[in-house]
Image 1 (tube, rainbow, N blue to C red):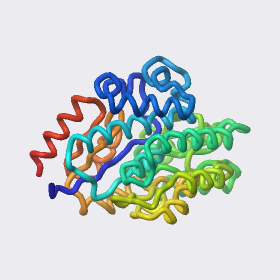
Image 2: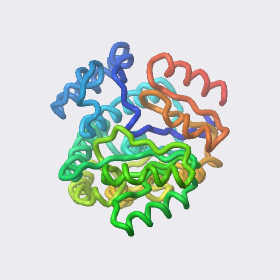
Image 3: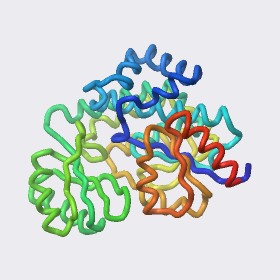
Length: 313
């Protein structure tokens, strides 16, 4: 099929009780993936994802659960079609699922890897109360200037996720974010809201996690990319193990350039297919593109997406 599809994968914040259960209940392939992941990590993913669990909000469990559902959705889709991506892209954690889709990581290895990533992030943040906050309605330059001014004044706050025009996530020390929120509103933000996050992602507070993550990446990454991956750090494509080893540890401490990535790739694709629970990225992409955006989050949306893509082609 000649249609050019970007495969995209959500990050932390897309989790919910029941995610992946429809795949598990109706696909032996998905069930085996979940059982293999449970066996190799020691995490009971049926309990974690299908029952009410406080663990689902803890980053070392949130990350592997989200990745596993995205990998299951992707596997069922490629098994059912001959559609392959011209590129893959993820939001934050989703970049690791994008590596699975690109053939550079085994799915179960990736689950183990991001379980470790979550542990390293939690450890890096364990000695201080940290958090993340979303700012709505301010341009990038205003938020960056405010952050810099407050860092100069002694607060630890950084702009870390450039999700869409007027939507930026800020990370840092929680008490500093609480002080910072009224300043953001004073500057004209429509909202400045603390998020339910147990870590401060993509900022210098995670520096200690970089080296151990790189060591595990060296073990698990393959140099067998079937499609380029868009880096959160540079908003540009890479397709080698060496580049991944350079960029993925940096991703821990540098901002996610999601809206920049969308601007860079939109002319090169005909549509987007989002794999994983819900359709978080569809909401972001609506502001960045007029191209069709499909999602694969359960068996019904899998079938609907296959039909819709065939009609496009």
